Length: 246
Length: 77
Image (cartoon, rainbow over all chains, first blue to last red; front, side, top):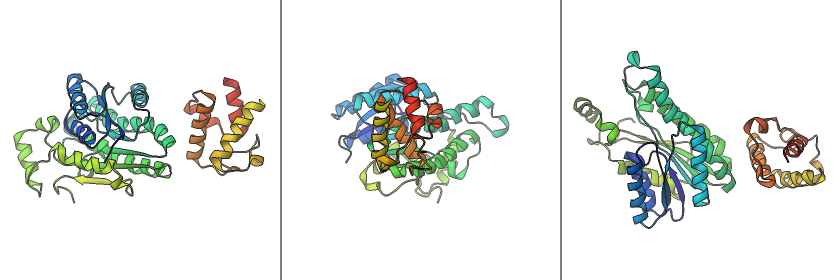
């Protein structure tokens, strides 16, 4: 389905990003695996992709830093010769109640989760415009649609990603580039394992499909957005949340 | 000079689908040659490739006419 496609996935050493990188590789893509700090885990993902017979490389880069982002994209294109798909997945949380949230907690989350998407999108656009084709998939969050107590920074960033998705979709559509977002619900990852048992149980009550999601549930939708099957879609945000927000 | 103008003209003709006679130094890409903002961005990208140079976003924003592009390229070459 994605034979020969060249992909860059940010935040791909763990969680949802890791699963997306592996799924796209299973479908035939070569993948650049970006990570910020988890080098060993990124190398594991690279080894797994190579075991599938696909090309892969790990690239360290803080997506909030425009110079490193430009270097990462340059290195990816040098290695692969082109770039067909960008998955903006890198994200962090610094949860706190609004009243107690530090300015630094706000800034860190906005810089990585929102500015990072802007910087990576801007950096790949040149190559994709030249190719007259490209797919950009942004990983937002269902809380960017619904809001969530204790996550003002994260929610603002993710709502921002949804708006950025729509605008980049409009700007890039004439050049054959589609931009769509996925809004995952409660997906079991390192990020959600940090939540207390009590919060996890409360979340479960709100999920009509009555289970937490698995990173694979997101990866399969990312594969759809990366594939030709979604060619007539752009600017959309797909809720993959077990029915939490309708 | 002639060489730069010639190469710029060729790219403008190809990219914007205009007649060579329309590509005058004073012609504005947007006003006279029917380019939209994205066309201008792409045009600048092609000029960068053609002349093997990098044009910063700040400089690119100042390129409004064919003459601006030619002058900029000559100042850097």
